[in-house]
Image (cartoon, rainbow, N blue to C red; front, side, top):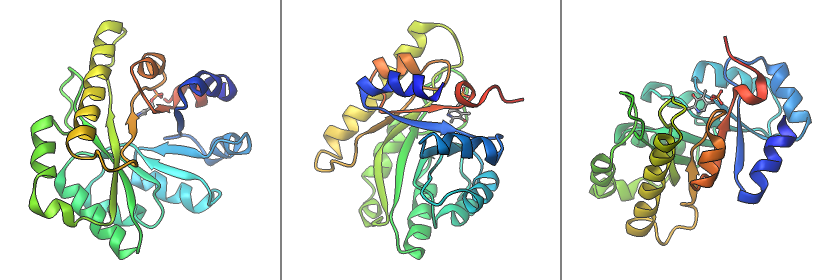
Length: 217
Ligand SMILES: *Cc1c(COP(=O)(O)O)cnc(C)c1O
């Protein structure tokens, strides 16, 4: 399954983040042995021990909601945080990254689903943050792009429209705020059920769990 997915991603040059939440370390090791290096987890309590036990050259992505008081546990090693959904959280990430003497790559999570999801920015919040005077002083974070989750539905038109919305946010941010930053380049969208549509709508990173590891119970 890994090879098949990688072949589908290749024409788009998209990155595969293998979402290993709830799965045992042995399952991660198996994909690692097959060459996979990017893995995603949605809970700090699960990510930290997996990082401790597994090979150190894994790139760990945090993809689920992150509470500010837990940032310190992943700041030493996390490769990218996809789920930055508030200015407060971003400031805490910056602070903990500074304490570790490193910079942490972050994506801004947008609300794009019709479902009443709790987490994610809307355009107004993001603009307020980017135009805040103190934003420029956050020098231990790198904003690498955007992330979003489409509505859980098989209505292709709706899912595509939501991905298009995210891509539009990305383009607007790139033009208005990040035009001089080549590292602002990622659109993290697409999961097991909708990654083909996401790729066609411009995804650069897909987050795939159940298709790779089997269903979660
Ligand atoms: C669980 C999860 C995924 C992967 O979902 P699958 O449907 O198993 O591919 C992707 N993104 C986020 C944020 C998740 O929590």
